[in-house]
Length: 259
Ligand code: 13P
Image (cartoon, rainbow, N blue to C red):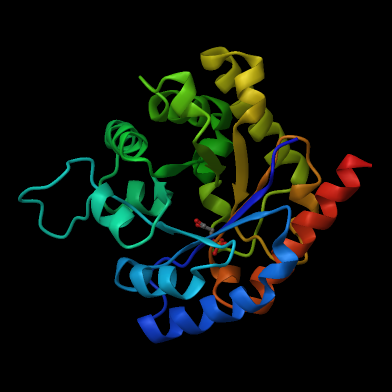
């Protein structure tokens, strides 16, 4: 049985003070998180302080992006070593906002994945189709090719360190989440793609999250699906009540699945 993972992608929200306040609230609630891995991904400026605030709790911290080079003249970028240095154990790679607005490509995603794994950071790699691609019937093609590109050249023993986040672009920040059944269909295809790369047994160990307008009220629909192992949460990760509600709904659904 895969342990579910719920990650909060704070995007460009929260000053250091605001981030520490939220992280501290979550630490207080974290006795309830048993059975679910919880990761917070603050903006770079707040990572160190948030990592410090969650120290000693089961909550882990990740960056929202990383550069693949170890160091050098790359203005505005941060390296894997820098993220590790301030307490990260995870990093989001290939978010659709970075693909759409900041020139991220399948190639740069793959460079970043390999650099992260080599450094000991665990990638949460994002894939997902646009509304136009869905309407054209291209969802599986797009997602399968993004998964294959992200995992390109990654050996099996490192692939198991990764998490895939399936985030249909049309569901992000729109309040229009995918249905559980549609998300399951794509996540099952992601798993079969991983099976084609690494074999069925390894594919069964890799966690796949759903992301896109996840709320406490719809999380059960996703966490109840056989191939969905948690969520990558944007807006609803910005307050403790909603984020804790999502974690609780995840744990409840997983318990039901086990019965
Ligand atoms: P929302 O939960 O705000 O739709 O964002 C999802 C997302 O992009 C997480 O990475």
